[in-house]
Image (cartoon, rainbow, N blue to C red; front, side, top):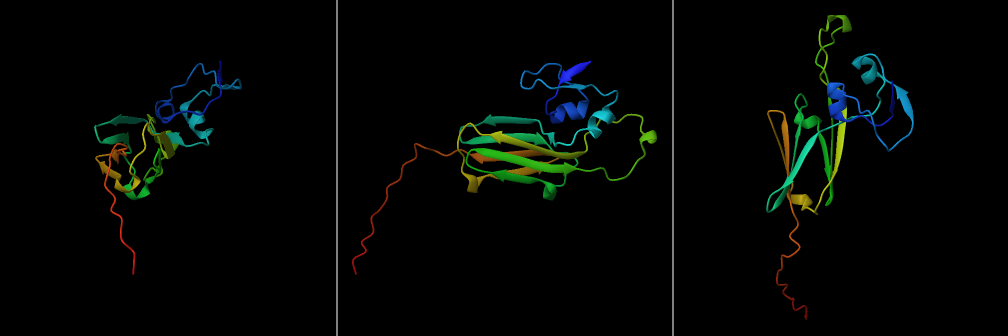
Length: 155
C-alpha cells in the first residue's frame, strides 16, 4: 500500500496512525511493517498537540509535556508566534526483545503556533503542572489610551 509522503504529527508518531490522503505532496512511500520502522525512519521532530483558546484578556495555550523537565523546554515567543521545543528521553536502555508494547513517543518535539492576535511578550507566563504546560499570553489592548505629558526642557 502506498501513501503520500508528509511530515508526521506528534499524534501520528505517538499512536502509529497513518494519514491515507494528503493533497500537499505527490510523492509516495511504502508503509513499513512495524511502528519501530516508522519511527526509526523518521528524522524530523514530533509535533505537539495543543489547545489554543482566548479569554477576555489572554490567549492560552495548553499542551502535554509529561516526562520532560521544565528546564529542558525551549519556549520562544514573539508578538504573533510561539514555538515550543523539547526532548523526551527514556531513562534506561531496554532491549527491543524485552518490550511487549511500545507506544510512547520518545525524542525531540516542536510546535510553532501562529497567534490570532498580538500579545504582550514581556508579560507572558509559562507554568507546568503534572505534565501539562500552560502558556498565558496577555493580549495587546489596541483600544487602550493614555495621556502623554509634555515635559518642559527649557534650561
